[in-house]
Length: 177
Length: 177
DNA sequence: TAAAGCATGTAATCCGTTACATGATTTA
DNA sequence: TAAATCATGTAACGGATTACATGCTTTA
Image (cartoon, rainbow over all chains, first blue to last red):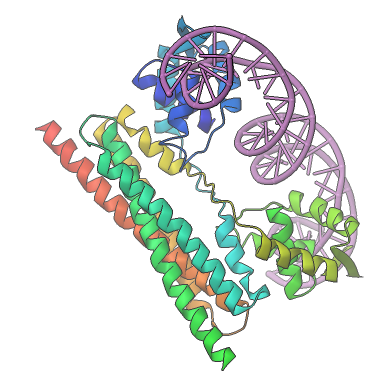
């Protein structure tokens, strides 16, 4: 139901093909909701059957362009207005931190350092996107806000990892002497 | 495979029943990896079949206590050492922010405010846990670190929401005049 | 004795990932 | 003409959620 509404949201802005939708989802939405094309195509077919979208044109390479119907537009906005988001979240990297007592302090520190590398890389990616994005047009303001959260999130994560790694490394050094 | 290793990690500390494992997972691990008892029991059965754990005792109310085997201990530590965590994450609440251009600025601001309430509540829960937890024993140091991340995460999230809501509200006020 | 909590399971369904499969068009 | 990119699909599998189902033990 989340994928469905994400697609409706994109189509509410303007008509697109399944390929384009997949491409957009795996660019801007990738960090908040990863999607595969193998989910998108069947979902689009189902949404046509449900009257939420309709095929507008067909281009070369058997391309199909879909547009949102009034029923579809109603469905997304009602979803946004009448339902609350789930806050469930899975974070394997953090779950592993719970288990770090199973390995040596040196190995635990190495794990935290490798996580740090990951988040520094992500942060750099987001900074690059922020730098090249002229934030002006309507829907882009919200994208920009999500991007801003991404910058803050990874920065805070890196700080926390530095704090945690410093602690563990201090302890590892003490154990070695 | 994540659930499996989470269970092995808990059993590596000391033997427990499926019920206890479920209870622990839905307390401390709930924020990073939500689990249902309907997943735990079949997984335990499979792990016995795979020789990673074994039934140690049976108590009243047909309780079964499982302990980790050397093979099981080897499996968790190898998982920790030889594999890298997936960083995929789904955040429905954030995905909705991308779609907020579909509703009025007032409605968007209300959404951000309700998210703020949620995160303030979570933060308070975590602060309560932090206050009542004497952080001393071995595996607890890592739990404490995860908890510290939780505190930082929700604080940062609240600050971001305040920043975003202020922006939208300023705009809503301008549109109204 | 009723309610709350302990304790374990199965079944149906949904959602997501990975792999398989095909073919047209553009560009180097 | 080969490679890259556009473009759309299906199938198998695995993991997670929800609902169904049962029964014992302690406490109020």
